[in-house]
Length: 309
Image: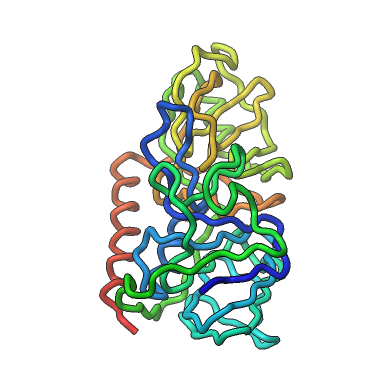
């Protein structure tokens, strides 16, 4: 059982929840840019949350199913049809052998996720199926899916109970909440006021490696270079030009720019939905607030597991 690619999208890749534990070797975790949406897509078809799916970015492709399958789409809504009929989001649906799913451009954010019951089955590399686009590791031949590719669907016997979503998923991505970064004290009060008080635009040069922003320039009292150190996911660096960069799922594991802030864990899914031209603003929250927001997000996922179709 497989999905045949009749037309590749802009960047359709196989992703799971990441290749964790290898940062000391210079390998960032990668994984779904919006892990929250991938987890939901998997639950909609009865997969474990960490099963691999297909991440579609900005413009999708065209896929033909070689056998009857049960699939779902989650994340930002795209133009989608199955054999010419509109296909719903956030709902598991059966597709028949030889039916064709066409995913067009996004109608909102940057990414959606296609999950199939049984998961996308590609070989594990360092304990994960995720594609690391920058280095060409993992996933399907280490690259985006192209016309003529065929990705296998895994063992349906590993499936669990299908969920049903009864609430509208509408995540406001224009406010990105942050905590202070490791070098936050290198930035004075005026810099922080500028950083949190102004709007930034997402640059065309953004990628899974980093979200580059343009707007008010931020200055550091000690210059824009530090001794090279580790960089966590979501760290916001301020390079020499003063324009912030959010380190993202394929970020370099070390760097020498000061980090003014970190995106809180529950808002990383918002970062994964940012597309060029989007306007965002940063909002500082306490560690206690960040923990509460993370617990609330996990409680929502848990509530879905208890809400069977």
